[in-house]
Image (cartoon, rainbow, N blue to C red; front, side, top):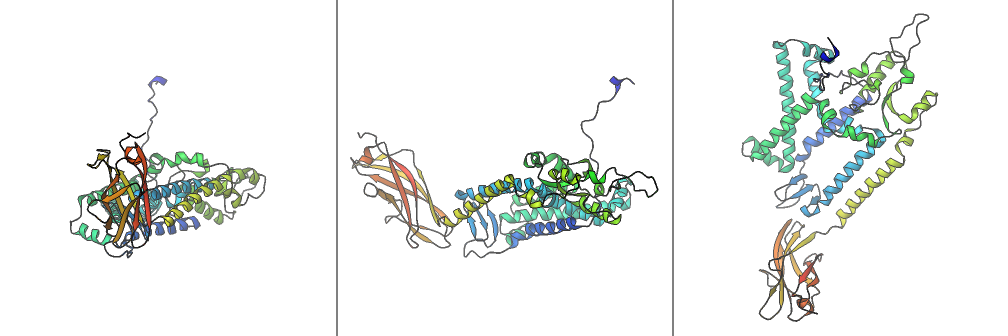
Length: 478
């Protein structure tokens, strides 16, 4: 066959299933603890009760879309305070940059939801089908009664986990006990059932069927991490200067001198991504540390020092090849880049805390009515109309007085309130129409625009808030 008759190389190859072997060690134990804590937080948080008084939700963490508010224990975020959410997202991004710069993809290896749920699904798979060798044999076996029974059992357990995942998510958006009862009695809103269905299917597919494919092909972070890491970043690596040449150790006289690596593939067999860390850093590596546990276990059995596969920095390679000890970890972690990320992260956090403590319990927003921009009254005075939204963040009814400055020029009237006092229910907002009038012939009446400040005064607590706007006149003055 000529070269022109050769079939073209395939641009896509079917997924090869990965069956990680069970391993024990400090990193595997750390992953178990993190998985238990993170899953516990996710599933249990909506059920934590928090007394906020009458007419308020008693759920500690609640995203109240109906009233457009977010509750987090004693903190209540209103729609106009979205900058708190934006600040938290900025802190999350900076934190991800910080940890990646210092310790590589530790987020991916230990706390990423995809990693946590994949670990959980693999645990169920191992419990039902056995460890790696049994799962490989079952995968290659023909379909029979046993294989069907094991597969259905595994899939049903996966489905229960997926349903629980989707169900736990919707509890963050409504009172959990009430929503659970409505779901069971089929009285919940169709959106709740649809959300649970979508999250159930995606959890089942991502955690059970796609697994490492999500990290390799769907997640952008493996492609971004190169910009976050440098030669001082601590990440998982193979000490080839100690392990090569690899091979089975022989005790016969005159045998070839081999390195510490006995080419047992233990590090490959435990890897949830199916890679060989001895080939160097790869896009698929999530630095979970399981290969370290597997290699250390083998090194201990053959009487070699641990650390053939370990968390190391590229900058230490020359020192270790020369027989010197690597730099202390703190010198890798505390360098200009990580200190800069830490300072920025802390600055955003401090800013959010300060903003949280100095914010007022009352607030108002002002929107001038533009049609018409002003009205000439029978006595020649000029009137502007404003829509003022008053927010009462207290847990009780409050009376507020609306005024303006300069008050020696303008007069104010609140629609439906002759005294200018407005009552606002607890943790609620009220929209009021406010009329501001400038006397006939005054500078404010004849000027095109005059700066105006509308004040809100809490009668009981003596708190004040204001919003700046403009008063539109006729523009006929000099």
